[in-house]
Image (cartoon, rainbow, N blue to C red; front, side):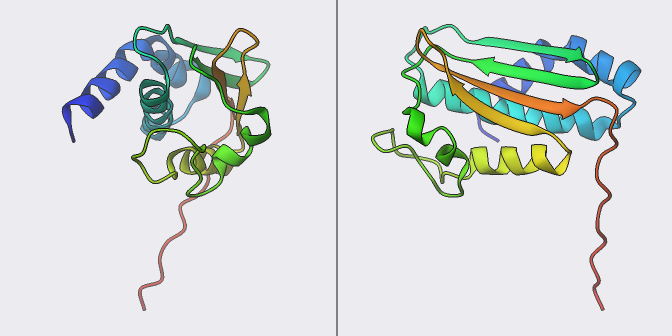
Length: 152
């Protein structure tokens, strides 16, 4: 694990510590929920760091409302061309003209994890510039069962 990744994970822990406490009292989930949220947030924050100009503000919020957990990460970068807002979740897809690096799998994996837990991961552009990523998860759902491998 490199220094940057470590800083992202520690930052996510600090930022979401109030939410993590709610996870145990309100959501009745296991430690997996914490890991799940941190992994998804770290991927979104990593993308913000790669595609947003240095010094740009980033807003992160979380709330539980009407049985749903809402987590948003909003930046003030260049945004995503509107016609590509769904395509960015495709495997191996990268927005043309963006910096090289990565495999184009991060958002696809994030969305797959969210969908597996009965939720949704959406992206939309901000009117004033930038992108908002929203993770919506059912607050009372239990994680999907783990399928055992048949090794015989």
